[in-house]
Length: 215
Length: 257
Image: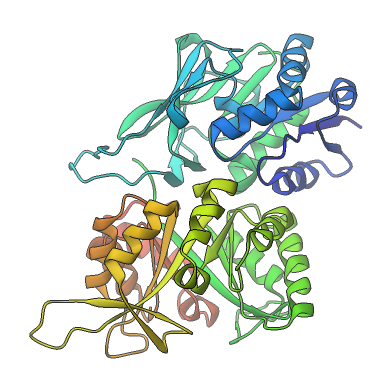
């Protein structure tokens, strides 16, 4: 039976993601941990995160999670980032007056802004909160069994723009088009919360647990 | 294509049991909140709100366990409200598996609590619940006031200004409970719903007095709500969630079906 390390750097609700993993693969060994050895020993690594990026990055650095993430990505084992765990992989976020992130992938995290409008020119609410449609831009093992344009649950005020278009695995639109999934070698990362996205989300987590890290 | 409007069934829970009654057909235990939440999830509810009306300290322990059980079996967002007064209360609910907490009376008596909670846990999980009632007389300009204690105690606070104040302090969402002057099951007060929704940049959930599916439609189309919360119309099987969603979609509202 495989094991997965859910990296715990003190931000957010890790219970849900751990329970969702156990639900889709009963018997899977889920370790919620920041211990480098436990992360190293796991077959798969998941980087979650909610809250403000400045606080997240401060805890990531304080606990040495930055080195663990870099090592896990380099190791070739399947790696999944969720929400702030996706944003943190970029170079830079404009949240909290500007925060340097892990720089694992070239890209920026931008604010939706106060003047976002839909097609009818009605102001859009920020945070982008609720179920939106996700357009898959590539074939990938993590999209297996998930219909294109399925709805996933989002809650965020900042969005990712990847510098390299070939790494975009899905997009979404909320006043502006933005990138909601990244795929590169053994890394997959998403802006939405699969653990809160019912069937489609649980299918993605199941795909992750069955994935060997090949594109 | 875009963000869907949400339907949120609300469960009133006391000492780990749903009160006010839920009468689904063929449900094993109509009083178990986890069983009911699972049923709503299967029907396509977009979120679940769990309102804890337990008064005793021991009862609160039960609530934490109920939230834990629910979060292990229900994979849509879960909001817990009722009795949230300190950051420690919030931490316990989030650790148990809640995604958001709803702060009500505590915000009225101590607005700084909202700021503290938002900076510590992030605005995305801080919902501020507001009970508003119309206080202007016929012929006067519309004015709504914040009430506490289940809508019994007026506070003198203007509802629209208060909602803006809560958002400035860090609320990520407003849960607005309003009721038309006529009382029960006559729909949302669309005036205050729209006034608050247009005054704040965060999502507004409309709640209170839903008696039929047109009330849900009006809440979104006229009240400009981002989500609608209802209890009894779903609990007593007057309408199912898929029925409500199809009805709303047929009237041009984007829904997750």
